[in-house]
Length: 261
Image (cartoon, rainbow, N blue to C red; front, side):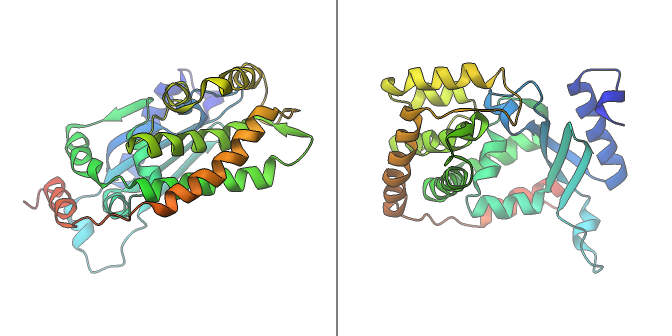
């Protein structure tokens, strides 16, 4: 069912869609959140919903000799609602690598569904956060956004935020070594210099009235911050030591969730 045809609010449709996924794919959803501008706190009037979830299959599906099913479920409802999930096995493998997006999902302020099982899994996964891996991922996002979208005389303000947010996250990590806030307001409070605040306020005030594709004049203070931060935090990230973690806690929580132990 498309969002425009649904007689409830977006949350009702999202929960209904997750139930549909469970029935159609024979899985259990452990955790579901918003990921993207609605979670970050700077959605445009026409922003879509980016729902991300973690699911687990039954024990037999992991033990069969037949080819394994995909470890990702993509369930696009329409242009307004994009729903995508990771199998628990994939999730825990990515946790071992310190995958940035897993930690962003786990820290999202917009929660649609959670379970006691997920809360136990998260306590095991949380220490696998890697400042070095996260900073390199954030820097890649900011660099690519800057090079592709922020070089003209007029720019999409959405893209300014897509470069600014990861660089402020890098600053938070460099200063505190912890998972950065997903909410942009909290991130600004944690990491933005006072001199940058007026430019951020200007950007946000314009962004919330614009559609996703609207453009505006460049904001020099933000341009300067992006250029400086890309250089500074690339060096910081390179100097950080890579972390090494055991597989055993992840293996144990996987087997416990399946009921094997």
